Image (cartoon, rainbow over all chains, first blue to last red; front, side, top):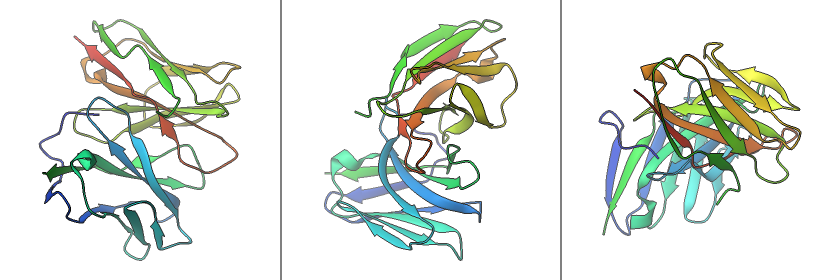
Length: 113
Length: 113
């Protein structure tokens, strides 16, 4: 992905810790949300998604929480590993245009061994 | 790997020139979206193609245009290049009939000098 930008939020954790990355979305009509991971030199990689009729969804080592009241999304990564180091983006999609993803700012996660 | 391939991986162009970027979608995917990712920012939606027609566009000027071919592959064309067009250009594919995640290619890094 991109070289890190000085203005991106950062999260630094130790290997084995749990990580929580937060995202505020903008469109109250959005009904589908995705978390992507972007490593240096690569395109965004799908991690997990959630639809607006749910407030929690779990994957392998990852959990996404959705709070529609305050338009907030979070990604929890359990037992964070050095390979999890990357930039993480949330993206939202409204039902009016399924293909148009609106991405958040991104958070840089650094995992120290 | 997502099965979405983009070419070229890197490109340097001069201001005022024209550029064509290419994308092959994942097998079974009939919709292709293009995104521009400036340094340190999240991807910005340019447009989407389905059934060889543009069916959604972001806030980009007309000098950004595209094509989709019968095999669902796609091209992004940018005319009259400007310095600010320097970015990572990402292609994503999905099935139009399903509101599911889009799978991204590795991107084309365009530098305009």
